[in-house]
Length: 260
Ligand code: APR
Image 1 (tube, protein in one colour):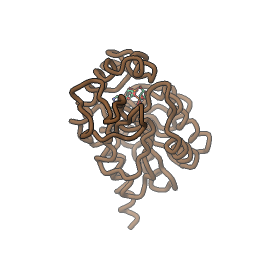
Image 2 (cartoon, rainbow, N blue to C red):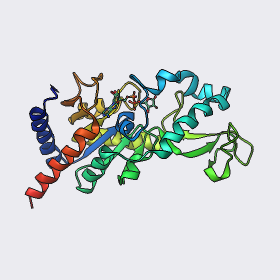
Image 3 (cartoon, protein in one colour):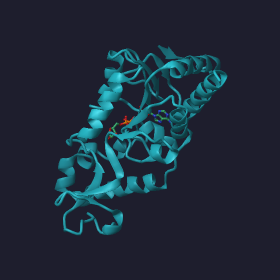
């Protein structure tokens, strides 16, 4: 069901979703780049998207990285600068509030920016890895930033090997522990909040479908329609995450407060 953006209807749908969250057993959030746009980190697709500027197959595939790590690091440093200067926005903070209120079991994020943890979320599954960690392609160990010279590209491990951010490039598998955890969360939740994702990249895009098939209600908050909006999502808000999530968190806290 797609809801128009007029305020009264949006508010009544926020209250309906709040009632769902207040009585659900397991609630899980799946987030994508859209939740961090208002923290200054561009999304990948759509106007102003990173993939409008850089061809993902030339800059975000493991084959391209191995073929020319210096060129890919040129793009990575541009994104890295934005990520390191980014701060959580009210959408990240609202999910942390829902977790503290006991109404969100955890967040599965496709983002590598660490903003959920910075906002106070404690259970975060980094489905596509983390830009805060570096890994050496030769010796395989995690390398601390202080151990590498980032001024010389590609940065190298003390062993001499090329390091890459510990993120999942196209053509790489999802880390097994994160994949298992995320699929278990999706198949056992009663509500899944899907926030700021175009839902076009598998296997993350399978998670809302899995949740739906397992009987969960799916609540989508995304500026634009996605492949989920018509047939998977039970509630759709085509508004910004920072406009909807804080109101949702407040409505849930009001309901829980009223139950005292
Ligand atoms: N609030 C809500 N939604 C927003 C906002 C906002 N403020 N700003 C943008 N969006 C929506 C866009 O309309 C878009 O549908 O967020 C979505 C972001 O989609 P993508 O840019 O495709 O990002 P994502 O879905 O996370 O991409 C998945 O693709 O390139 C790979 O590994 C990368 O993790 C990434 C994966």
